[in-house]
Image (tube, rainbow, N blue to C red; front, top):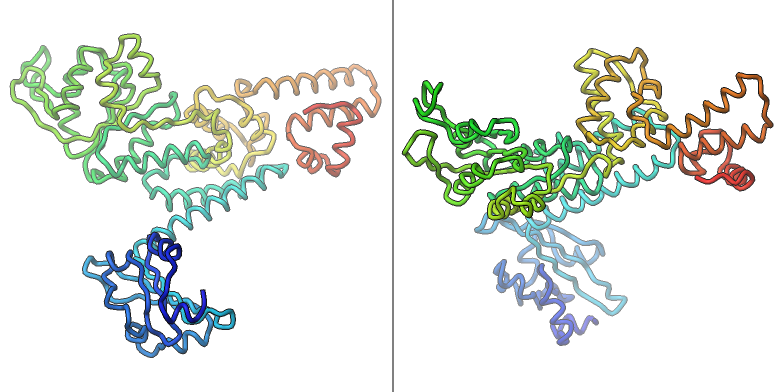
Amino acid sequence: MTGDFVARNVLSEKESLILEALPYGIGIIDENGYIVYVNSCQLETMNLSHMIGQNIDKFLPRGVNFTAILSTRLSFSYSNNPRTNGGCTVIDIIPLHPEKGVGGAVLLVRDEQDISTVKEQLQWAMDKVKYLEQRLSEKKESGWYSERMRSESIEQKKIRSIKHGKAFERFIGMSPKVLDSLEVAAKAANVQSTVLICGKSGTGKELVAEGIHQASSRAQGAFVRINCAAIPETLIESEMFGHEKGAFTGAVKRKLGKFEQAHNGTIFLDEIGEMELSMQTKLLRVLQNGCFERVGGEETIRVDARIIAATNRDLGQIVKEGLFREDLYYRLNVIPIHLPSLNERKEDIPLLVDHFLKKFNREFGKQVIGIKKAAMDALICYDWPGNVRELQNIMERMVALTDSLYIELDDIPECCYCKEMSSMNVEADDLYGAIMQGELFSLADYEKHIIKAALERYGSYTAVGKALGITRKTVAAKVQKYGVDK
């Protein structure tokens, strides 16, 4: 592109197609300050056709002129007057380089809201990269420290607040699987579709359901919970839809059901897979028509309630077994959200440990500062069949019983020792027992055991070197010498 090209406003077919395809405004200003081209995006969306042929000085803020902008060789940005739709247009003027045969300037025209959205997305991406770099760096270190975990927790809240708002702050985690699940949940909050949250017991299904409610337009309405497995079959219809006075023995007055209580709000049906088939039929009617009758009543009640269901079972499988209605399953499974088990997101365990440490310090009036690395290793190694709920229980026990400023390995319950940790401890106990009985071993035997145990615990040569006070190269040499495998 040359200065003559800009002045004559001549575009090749290929160049024109490229500029016309861009989703934001591109203009060309010649060396004398005249606007000789604006692409169709801005002609259509911002009504800027009047700018063509005009001198850019007419549109610049008072005290600014095109010649001065060119002389600085720096881009110049400003916002024009608000448009009729309430937004503003941001205009950038980017000087070109006449010494390279290109004179004049390029005009960029964008919607202020678009820029704000891009900035948020960019900030989110930068924060996530920063967090992941920090996590990668820390995995190479030899120890876990309470202050580092606290800074992680703060960083996590910042990132999650940018991406999802504050509605999901109570769900602790920054692993990719968690972020993916919360991404779907945040989008689900913007619509009224039914949501089905799947995940094992203790994974936080109710927290996500509450987050969807709080982030939705129904946040001012009630969030009503009902556990479908905890209510006897004979009472669940009355619990959900209410009953009239005298409907059955003990019905001494009218009672409003959970659906009426959730009008203009959200109803959370936990353990939906445990609902009896007869009740599933009645629930399907509410989903389809938004109406029901109280037990013992004839009046049709209409209700506007958003339904979020949750299950720890494979509903697709129990549909095949004939224990769950297929039509109800499809009605519920409009927006599915899968929550990973704790075993699938072990990188979140340090964040959860810090969260529960602070929680129980407050509740018990204690000042446990942090957790030693060996103890953290044991928690990360364990499979957590009870998921976050089990971790919370273990943390409560350890904070309540410890007299130390730190959670030590000895504070970890035996049930939380995984096979790898147990086998390592057995081997260590055998060696220690032999020594106590008066047996002596060569220094090489001791060294081999120490290197092997350290590798099993820390995983990498770098971490082992830091823990033992030797270099990575020395660790590698010892591993080769003794034939030790990770």
